[in-house]
Structures are given as C-alpha cells and as structure tokens.
Amino acid sequence: QVQLVESGGGLVQPGGSLRLSCAASGFTFSSYAMSWYRQTPGKERELVAAITSAGGRINYADSVKGRFTISRDNAKNTVYLQMISLKPEDTAVYYCNARRPLYGMDYWGKGTLVTVSS
Image (cartoon, rainbow, N blue to C red; front, side):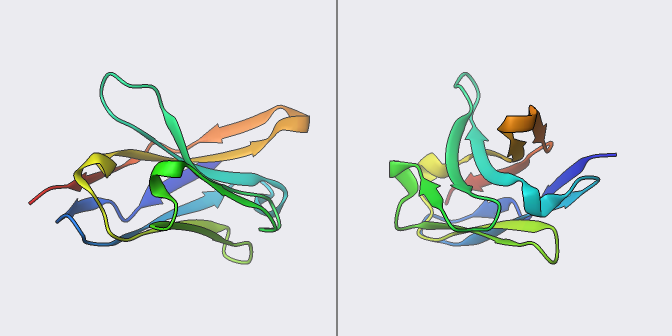
C-alpha cells in the first residue's frame, strides 16, 4: 500500500524555520521524482520545490528561492523541505508528491499545516 506521510508542520514566528519530512512506503522511492506543493483556502495547489529521482535536478518556485531547500535520502525513503526566513505568506498546507510520469504514477500525502504568525 502506497503511503506518503508528511510531518514537521506547526506554528512558527515570521523569520523562523521549519523542516518538513515526507516518509514514503509501498513503492520504489528511488525511482520517483519528489515534490512539495502547498495550498491555501480558495487557491490552487502550487508547486514549491521538486527534486528528480537521483537528486540531480532541483527546481523551486520563485517565491521560495533562497529560503527553502528540498533534499532526499533514498536510503531512508524520505524527502525533506528545509524552510528558513519564513513569512506569513508561507502559511499553507504542505503536501508531498511522488511522480513517475512515464508510468502514470502520481501519489499524494495528506498534508501538514504550516502557520507563520506572530
């Protein structure tokens, strides 16, 4: 059974840091590109960061460049999102995504809430 379980969300003050984790199981993690998305009420889910299966290529949304870092540990079947210099506009539910488009595989976690507020 495929599972993506996000953790690490919570309440943080502006300028603070958080590290999100996404633990994967039930599929060959090292064969999948992994991404973090976020969504706020009334808005579409947006891509925050993505990393290829071997970690050789990484992309970020312009709004988080220089503040967020995506990484993965294929030995631990886990992808991370390190977030620093958090802003109130980073408040959202953050979702983990695993994708292998050539095979039509696309999995989602249930999300973890990040709230940036003083």
